Amino acid sequence: MKTDDKSKSGKWKHGHQKQHKRPVVTMTLNLHELYKKCSPSYRYSPSMKLHRILTEIPENCCEYYNNGYDLPNGDYIIRKEDIVVSPEGTEYLIEELIGKGTFGQVVKCK
Image 1 (cartoon, rainbow, N blue to C red):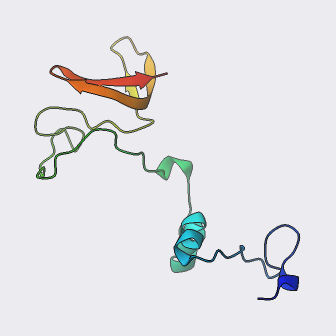
Image 2 (image 1 turned 120 degrees about the vertical axis):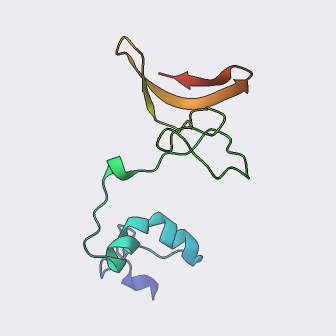
């Protein structure tokens, strides 16, 4: 497209997002728009967001326990932004995995 087809907002006059030189970057930045084009019924909600897995999962691991929340060795599969609730009802939001030791995993929460 010609440069005069762009508006000052960074979008094309026809409502399309500005294209990057690399198609993969464009598809990643506008992924929800791509999903909408493929399936008009698609609706994004922040609750659908996948959380990054922080627990190291062995390559040969193919079985999960506790409805997919635990590894075969009993370790909880920790995900960023998971909420862990204490027996007293206090909620902790997991921010990052600090380490792993003999007796379990150590996480930073807020």
